[in-house]
Length: 276
Image (tube, rainbow, N blue to C red; front, side, top):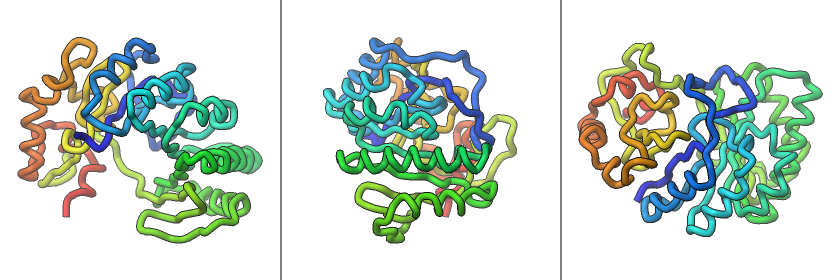
């Protein structure tokens, strides 16, 4: 059983953030038939589905339908979003039974103070509505050292919107019931053009998680934005055979020994944080 599986329902995004690696794949949105096929393959493999690798999931018009399909299959759905479409899609999103919504506040790097104020106001209102229905909302500021001077303003706006607990914990702050603020370091995405990042390597890819790109390609983690480590295609092969292919087994065995069998993994800055 995997802790989570990333399903990229679309690789299209409505923003162009500097921290995002991006991709060069053709734009595509997953169909209902494709998503249903994936759900059937994932039964017994995980309880939690995340709706991205690349792309903004709220740009997909069928997202509420996908959430309902997943819920009916017994999955809990977790969405990571830049938050810009939360206001217009709030009602259909919350009525579809989403379990958790992560809002990447560090996406808002450009724009006027007025637009930032409206942005925070919209996501705060969404969080209040969501928390009453039992949906968890996590505001993310994963930009340690690269906040573009907006973090203090964002936090100030959140404090004006929420008069809750604001209790510190190991990952950030509990603002109120079901509402959290989480801090994190900005990281370098793996890229074949990057230098090798160290001598020892470890990753939770294929141990706790794996990803499925919008075209069905199965990849070991949520950071393989181009599908470089393509283990197989879930629309053409059984997921069990894909996850147990020679390439996947070599990756898992390598990480157990502090080694990376794939060149892309050797160039992943995020994975280095797991090396003690």
